[in-house]
Image (cartoon, rainbow, N blue to C red; front, side):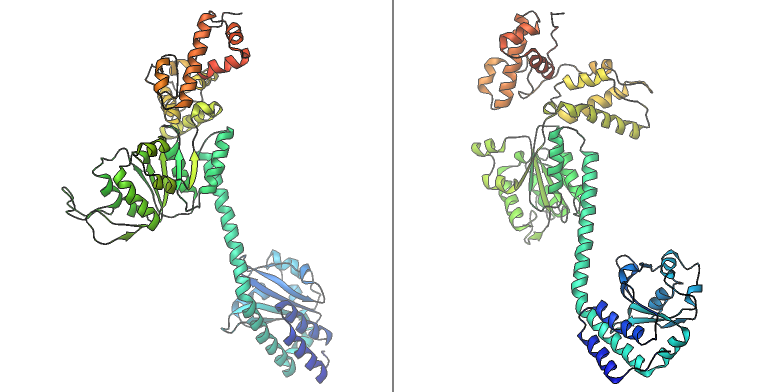
Length: 526
């Protein structure tokens, strides 16, 4: 039976509870007093953790709270869980005899003694919502006496009010910390998902592509404008789409090809129009800027945008406001801008056909997609990826691409980059029998001579006298190198050793250059 508390002990208990600054310290005061009075053998306090849907140990006397297990809120037969869910006190005459309650209760039951009874007291806030429980264990007779004691009832009520007050005071800070933790976890999961998406969809194993994926990942949740540069077919539009897909914006990805829209219609296409604003405007249209609200506006071939429209676009970017053609009221659109071009915009600025202020506004972040000839090690994995998609979409069964065919693809200059590679593989797959690998023969039939740009030189692409007129220095240097190697091999009757010696480079270097420029002259040496 609990002994009678002296007035000085009651005053000390009340003082210590009042001085407590944290819920676990407050719970320890009341539990320690009950154990010391002989009313309890073991006292525990558990608090609800809503983020993980469990009861976490807060205090325990005479043991340490860290030794107690967490309790699953799904174990409704657990008297501690029941007490919190119901919001009412409950009594268990022989708690050690309870079996089949749940795995977390079984771990707690190890601390019960035969004959222990339990008195479960929910702790409620000012709105009478239970958020914690006291579990008082001991002799059933002693617990009965504790329940009947007016003094202990008063102390427990004081404890509940003080506990609720401390929780209220600490609640805002704890909820903020919990919310921060949840946001951090969500951000981590989002980044991991974005990284997986980029790795799966922007295919490549070269250092350049790995760096490119890393840059794309860092841009996914940025609101700054992005300018993507690279040759035609290199994958600029795909990179833009992936940046949007990997980000957190919930709106649409709205692509606009500035080179494909007639000059007199591009303004209405972007900003929309009122009915009757121009000939043929039989109805009002919202426009692509409005459609991109909350999402991403992708302006492909931005270098082809008419000069007079560039000023309006700059104002939209600065103010996020625009006015449809024929409208009197401005409208708002919150979009993230991604632009792409294969043109040298600084040169366009010098020519007066592109605004310098718009150029600096759209290139807050820059991303360059390298041409395939600069990363030939990516060609096999890209080709296999295209073939995998083909098999999946067409329900076909082309097992793979032969090693000889892959080498042929790597030697091909691929002026159309990924777009050309994809077309080569798809057409070759159509010409390949089911269950057979793509062979060099299937590719040779596709590689008919075609016009090429200066950046992709062959001996017939760029005559030497044209090099003086080009505006592409890297392409001119590459074309000259290709001409020089071909001519030197011709003079050496195909001997790579003699040609390399005359050029002052190792034979191995010459072989790599021949492979790069698709120079197939036979080596006259054994």
